Length: 103
Ligand SMILES: [Zn+2]
Image 1 (cartoon, rainbow, N blue to C red):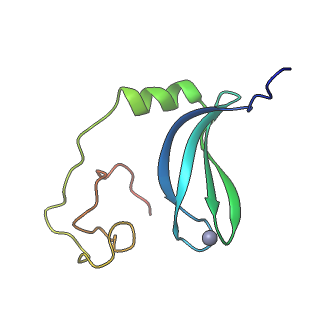
Image 2 (image 1 turned 90 degrees about the vertical axis):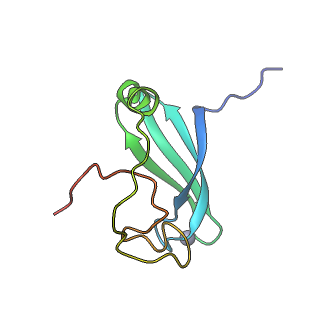
């Protein structure tokens, strides 16, 4: 008997936001067909699949080599009430440094 194999390799586990209701949900980072994907499941809205990167080698290098200690902002813009990401605008618990400006 041959075991049925999943088509992806699990890279890690994390939390994410549901794309519909923005509740925090459990998520898996998986590698499949040369791409990195985020698989998440909301109790209300079901499974969701988000493309993280279309170049898995670059994505892995960014995750494993280009690591950087999180910076704290000098003056948080929103107070802590419910925790990041719900308070984030940027909140005192925010862990990620600024890396991209959106206009
Ligand atoms: Zn949802």
